[in-house]
Length: 468
Ligand SMILES: Nc1ncnc2c1ncn2[C@@H]1O[C@H](COP(=O)(O)OP(=O)(O)OP(=O)(O)O)[C@@H](O)[C@H]1O
Image (cartoon, rainbow, N blue to C red; front, side):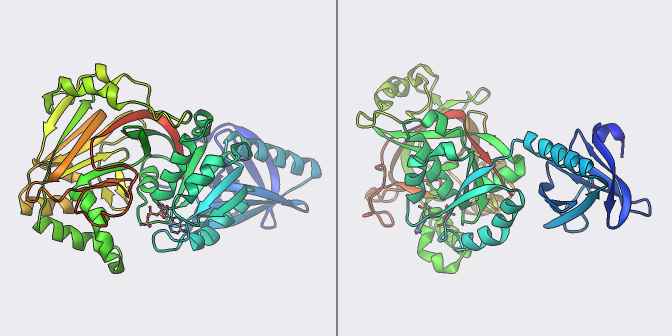
């Protein structure tokens, strides 16, 4: 390997590896490399592969996660990751101390969280979060010398309650071993705190263990630690903070009503999607939006919606603290409007809605915009084809789909065109935000009513990471 590519040596010394004296080097770019007889070289990337180390007598044990096929770095494709220890023995006490000091300094410089608060939802997804935590997460945290406190969620909104009152000074990260639902609860709990401004700076990790793992999938696709836009949904004085998506119409109906067929497992979504496509509903209503630069040609200009904004954006007089949403004057912006009927309205913050649903291929974590995917009319066959393209994001190229980016959005949902006594469902981050008349489980209480909603985005407000 090229010396400059691997960085300058921080420490280079003779050590014993597997009974043989060899040269070990730690470089400024975090490579720990040594030769292993017969001219072959080994290399560990401290930032990526080394979790921690311990001293055992005169030896140093490096605890790492490496490619199961060998652990030789700097090759393209990867196999599964496995935990593996590497032991080396410096030739003197002074050298041992120097190695410990330099390795620790390098690991500390990576800024990894050292004290984590971990939520585990034992009831999410396939009910495997506890096993995932014990088998996959806990050993890595122990190897990395991370202190952690575990809280199993006991009921809906438990994670939100805990995040609301947690002593954040004790932790430098919160991890959710769950689906997207717990992460969304945590963000809502943090943003309702008096000290929300400091609280939302906490790094939020996700380990996928639910049905909907869109955030983990999006993170793995785009980098391990990212700042993330947070969307605030207002209805009068009520607020909800969304990280992933809002759906109304076809996608919401499939996502929520397919719960009737939970016994089918993951096939329930495809099964119910077919049912909905062959008995397609359309909804009356209106959407208004402030387009991102480059998308101004969509819809018709609408001045009255801007004027009404100052009335909608009133803070809840009963909640004197907590995050109040982005500080922008929405009345001054150039609003556009599209009238229904609509088959589907889908607003997305990150590309992936689930592990195999690339809902919004152009969505960025912190561009300050939401991706809007609109279907107004679509023949059955085209709709079927479009749904099969959801796993690669090509559905947005369909002539029946309008795909744009917006800065702010207003939804005025109406009833179904075929039956005005039946309204729809508004699905936010996989949970029901509002249910209209005549919908599935319409007697259940929801946070908001099936009426006008306003959504604005705060650029990069939260920080999310993928810890494993
Ligand atoms: N002990 C519990 N019993 C019942 N529900 C719970 C419990 N703990 C958490 N929940 C609820 O489970 C919901 C889903 O959690 P999670 O994020 O793990 O998975 P999901 O993929 O979003 O959804 P799911 O797998 O349930 O379809 C959360 O909204 C949370 O309120």
